[in-house]
Amino acid sequence: MNINYDQLSEIKKELNEYPEAKLQIVTKNREEKVVRELIDEGYFIFGENKVQEAQQKFKNIKNANVDLHLIGPLQTNKVKIALNLFDCIQSIDRSKLVLEIAKCMDKQKIKTKNFYIQINIGEETQKSGVYPNNLKELYQLCIEKNLSVKGLMCIPPFDMPSENYFHEMRSLRDNLNKNLELSMGMSNDYKVSLKCGSNLIRIGSRIFS
Image (tube, rainbow, N blue to C red; front, top):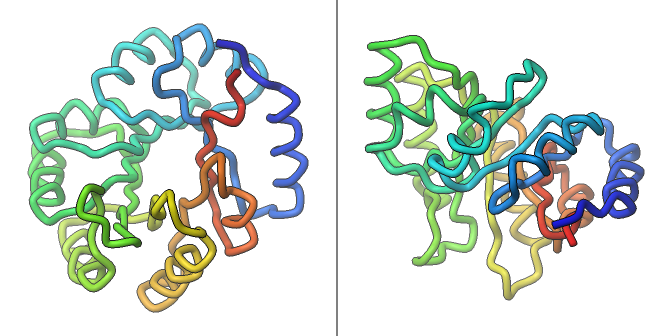
């Protein structure tokens, strides 16, 4: 699997127009050597979908600049591992998960510094994420349990234009807490997400060939 540096260069150039936005490279299903190559090229923000895959891949990567995010669903029985592996968990989506994280935080020092609440912005039954109507309640629970909520994350329906969903995400954020960041936009719709105010784009397939 090769890294498409032409695409990476194009994305970096586009990001110059959005100084408040950053690139996160999704390295799920990529080998450790690919991650190391990206680090050598100056990329440090990575997204992984599975706890065990990330644990295996990053266990020998000792670089203080690496900012590793969990962007896939988190099972409560893997919370302890996740909190000692990831710098940020973007998939907070239910009260049970928040309570389990809080329990672990009370018992030990953790690596995870920040959390994002994942919103099921299209209200799709097959997807993870809190429904928009339940966002405020979950956010308040996070604050009550001392989780450092940095932002909101979403994955819009794949078969629908993303723009309206991104606008809705921004509205939800503004009504909740304008200081929160937005993690939205992937390989197929990141340009739209940047125009809608995304602070973190999650790019994978576009830069691998």
